[in-house]
Length: 505
Ligand SMILES: [Zn+2]
Image (cartoon, rainbow, N blue to C red; front, side):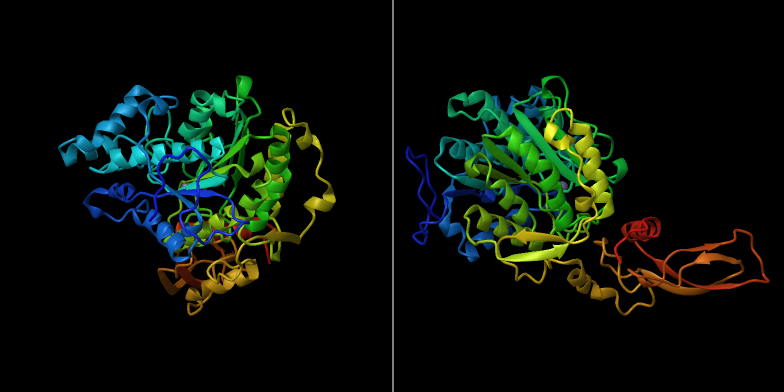
């Protein structure tokens, strides 16, 4: 690895294979961030391999050679203090020097979804400092864009507490640093795009009153039941005081959303607002857990590429990506590679995809637009029925399209569910389901009840669906039924398709 130290002029690439069309893309990775892991080596989704697989892929694909490799840096306490309380900073700073592991565990248990070990303090400082480093280099014009491959992630971390695997809010610290500490660089307006499948609650709160930051988050909300549960991720949270209108939440109602849904949100909410906001820089809370293949995510293929491509036209392409979530290692590597290809403007748009947003997506988009129309007049324009009724959207995507793991159309995606083909009935999870596991148990049983209603088969599950029996036992009438022991996720999908008449067929 050819590491560049501080330099005065524009940074040069680490390899000699850069072509004139390449943009200067910075990368930061540091193995020390892998020293933060769940104590006792317990299986935990936020594991060191998340960043290792990304780094390995960027090297094996040859992309890293075409980028500028930066040294990771420790965050400065003064910069952390721009968004965090002193108590919070002291907690994270000292947690790894705590001699007793049980005490560390007890401290972690006070928080929501947090673990600490002896490497946590250093990793947290490096993650925050590295995002600041990339952001500063991009703001200075020494890089065109950059990707901080960091962990622990940051967007759930709040002013006074770690949360949701996040210790310091890396993206918020970097944005605050540029806006408050490096005003000389002329970055006065920052668009933060949080496409992690979870709401960026911490980042939202840190800039809720600040019109210099337009915070945009698209996430599963599931009517307030998806992590982090509650109303913070609702579309009614639009900012307050001088920051009113500068907080945009697009809350998905379930896990079905894929490329067409995300692109519709980009086209009808984010891009029009970004055009008016005209940011000086874009920082992406780049979680890859909305990618297809992540058990609790959505269904975005080659996560982020088409979304990133559309953002490249803003802020002169000054884009800083900071890793947030993403827990499927193969999907992480694929998505990160595809995004770096876009940052390098590696490949032209080479294809189209036939897909269409769900009806619920149009409903959410219209609700968000209405909520924000007082602040962004362009959103007050009513979407034509022609747009909303459109069933097939031509979607352009960039980068490679040959990845079998990430198919580009729902019909192809179903092929990935072959694992349950051998079970009786319910041969495949419905289209939106990310849970490909076989039913844990299948039994046929006779019930002494009258059958009220049942589906013999449904279009998305094949044989099977819901059944309702009369609650009163009746030996004269018996119902012979197949029972499936399925996960809550799969159960929700069954309910969903039963309740949404326009569900994909
Ligand atoms: Zn996430």
